[in-house]
Length: 205
Image 1 (cartoon, rainbow, N blue to C red):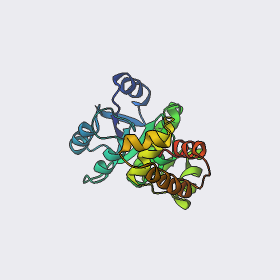
Image 2: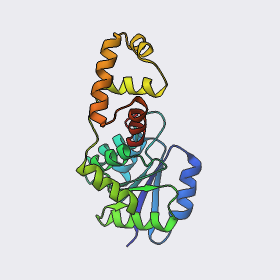
Image 3: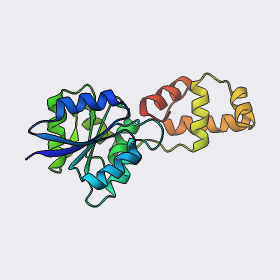
């Protein structure tokens, strides 16, 4: 049985390349979209079995927001994220939004075709190493940082000292130190460099 698929990527050359390697007996490409908004409109009209969607889509909604909207359609297509990004926060975010799979763009064409077919059949599609990380992430959810704590972390990652962070956020140095204490506790680290490293590794910043 041929699975119909809608390609969603903001780069025309990527869409052309995917169409060239995917379109065949097992998979039929029925449409292309450059934005999440366009993908939702086309999916409602074309009713593909699967939407193969990039994570970053330029201006407008991203792949995770697009996934949420696509899964709310009736009938809802299966969504497989195809991206270059493999950070834990993005993988978990996509799965939590309802994605049936998460594949990386360096995967072999055969693996992507097989992933599309499996997603169309209702299966979950994850590369083995990503599957292990998703299971680990679900058992040990990412720490919940406040918006202000994320701001502090980003400034920390830029190399800002406490005084500079305080000046940028219009707060006192004591408040910055308090935020840092909370961040260290939540991330289970004991230094500024470790906090930045963990935040980057997990996709918090």
